Image 1: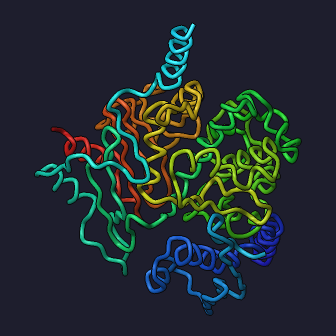
Image 2: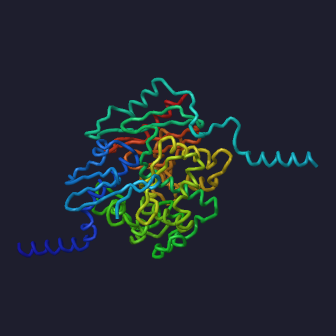
Image 3: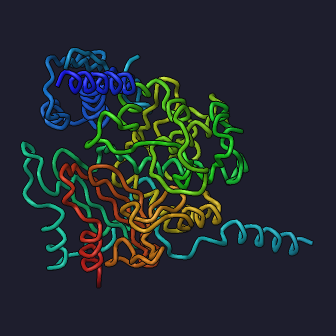
Length: 98
Length: 364
């Protein structure tokens, strides 16, 4: 039994080591996705704020959301990470910063 | 002498305008409108495309825009949800075919050849020296890319590219992937391949000219005034995903393609370029994707022993397709261009069903 658990632990650590880059980046997905696609929904497609909140909704919850309409900057936090997207100009729309 | 000169001038003006047919309709600042289609077949089309919409559950078919152009004139147009005729709508992967069209103009300017190694224009591809521009256009780079997004977010190359590890420089991120097949031998749909094309274009033009090129080369000649194309932090266009156009403006690109790359009297895309776009990739295996890949466009062709992807539509139909139901369909033999924007979240939408109903609705 102990041997089996040890084997599983080794396999798990091996997997974590193998996937470490993907695992480290994974928690950023929800806040980065929400910030970027909300920014584009609101400031590129010019849809209203309420529609855009529904448009970016995912099954994972976010903990914080701010949309500074003066600087057209959207900041979102979720699963311990925070990401911002900002509208650049008429041609180039929004992008994640940095 | 004077007679000879005027004959010469006449001949020159005839050659310059030789290709525009008399009476042919083109959009100017606005699209011309033709007789609106009506009747039970149009109602059947609307029943399919515009069922009652629920923005809270986001279930079912959720068309944002449906625009039908025949013979260069609007014959049907309807918007839903928040989208209007003025909305520059996200096209998602239609962007890929738009990048191919921008590249077509560069091809006409002799800035590259299809058989050129992509690394010639994009040095970070030095670790993949065998990849040609044509291979990227066929989504056949051989780069080991994972396109799945919603079902395998941890392993998805495209999610990492757009939102996390790749977002600062998406082409470098794609180039850093290993190889799984020899270039040009196997189809694997890849947003990385499309963004490598966007980076190669930068190498062909230089960064200065590149920043405006989609506008100067394609949008402005077509009279498209409000296109948006987002870039990554390195200034490379996100050719895989992030072009935004109104439905009417996207239809202009469709009309350009329907008329073999000609815009009024100007051959904006060489005819051999459009022929390449519409030629099935020879190593494509039936069932690998929802339609048959050509040169960064999707074709309704019967290949590899399988039937055509959209049996209700004629075999000359081709399309630019994007996530969540975005589509630009071109049916040159029927002089038809159809734009559909949507926010389909559950995959219930069928291209074949829409095309079947559009074709019935436009019958005289």
